[in-house]
Image (cartoon, rainbow, N blue to C red; front, side, top):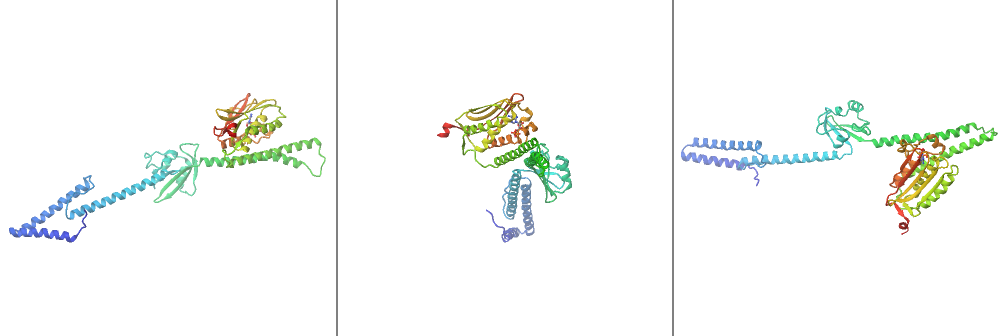
Length: 439
Ligand code: ADP
């Protein structure tokens, strides 16, 4: 139990002690000797307590002080109280640092604290992964010795940190990192590196896309402009053959532009679509019979043998306009890219409880090196030939987007000289066999 310190009590106790010493001195008639022995005894007791205090502070592992009485009890308790308060403060501070580190570890970016001598004071886990730092081995090493990219070193030494820089990651050259440096405190720096690969790629794609669209539109417009410049309004007498050629060419080119714009609109509609795939059932057999008639009209020139093998009971959950676009793109491509009098087989059937669509032709086929890139926008195997067919280079990109929206994927198998097979399957959950649908 803690007793508050009282000077009065302490002095009273001292007075009582000397009163007893004096009484003993008087009784034995040795007053001076008694006072000297009494004072020495008191000194001894204090030295003894100083010795115990020293032993407790420096050599004892115990937190609690040794038991004693009087003034020393207060001193021990005071020190014990200060120690406990310090310990709690240290604990609080430790917890704060721990929470701060946990917060910094949870950052989605790589973070490195650099001291006034450009040495690493601390880094988080992502910094170890993205920047290739190792912890604690790299603690105290100069950051510009560890991140060796010349652009980073220049940026770091220039000391102008208003703008970030973008450079490849030291651990993976495919990745682009954005480095930001924030000075704080006493010449300390906080270096933050963010993965901006995707943003950079999107920006590249956007630039390519604009360049491609402009290029695609410029060619037909040049043809139209050429003819328009040739025509003179005052001179109505042009040879008939010339007029026929001019009109045929202008019509073909304006159709090409129209087709391109329509395809672009379809693509952007699909990309922006928020429609849910699971809501409506699409009657694929009915849709295929409509496409069959369109294909027959398109096939007049080439006279391919086109066969449709359709399971009449097979339907899917999906978005009708999108699926129609995907199915017809694959069928019309087969008609366009198969030399005249070829054979095309269109199939819609059940495989492993999943609806599968395929278009197979015995055309020229596609070389292996093109297969992976076919679904890229504006990618064509043979640009000149594709343009002649009126192709925009967007057909398979549309198919890819539609299928992604329907959780499916386009499979392309092709062999040069033998033909191609384009196919995709819908998941079990999207597949509907008609008896289920009518139930
Ligand atoms: P396009 O509008 O030019 O037809 P697509 O994206 O539909 O563009 O097709 C991309 C390219 O894939 C075409 O230019 C063509 O070279 C090739 N291709 C597509 N379908 C076939 C096929 N059935 N047989 C051979 N090549 C094909």
